[in-house]
Figure 1 (cartoon, rainbow, N blue to C red):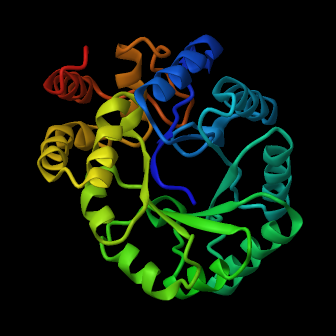
Figure 2 (tube, helix red, strand yellow; figure 1 turned 90 degrees about the vertical axis):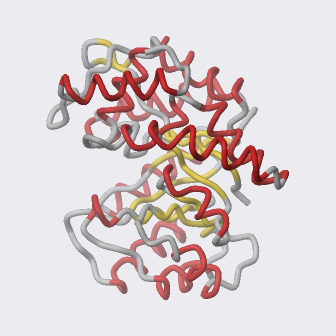
Length: 292
């Protein structure tokens, strides 16, 4: 079962090219800070603008650097089922622990289409699959009934749910019969409420720059240290907020560049944050005593 803090890794660039040295340091930074796992080549990792060779390069590098110390979940999703199968087979072959598969974007499949998409990937591959629901980006949402249907498949291991509905973990728990089905948040700012409503953890953007603080939230939850949980929740709130003042991963890549992980560049159609946003990001880093 996947529980706790999983960092949705950025892919550091140097002049819009992959910065392998910075990526390796970022992975080591995360593991040393106590994260429970890593997610590579997801939305935050800019997989949508990578070539096939670059995608394989980053996935291999992450798995090699992690070296089995923490689980590595690979983003293998897309809007072409055959390509998702190929990506998932590749992830399995190079040692991934699970695949994170986003709902197909742009195509806008029905709930039956979503069920058949995930079922086809499941049946053609041999890797635990974490469903990824992010309707704000994809234009389609997995209904709770569809999640429950998919959870009956043996290798559907959980869901990352990035919606503003804080009742979702409760609804999913009530519908899914699989006891070891992981329910992970995709929203940093509401993680405490998500855990309280039956969630198991978070795939975090903010953890790229504050992994120890984010890991501390989950540690405090496990230990029932409510005072520490409240302290970290309130301390991290301004940082969570600025990570999404512009389209992810623009703000977090700029923040990471201030810490020495890449130069903050992105690939079009995304671009660097405005100067006003950069100032707010720097202020938020300083508010939690992170150099910026």
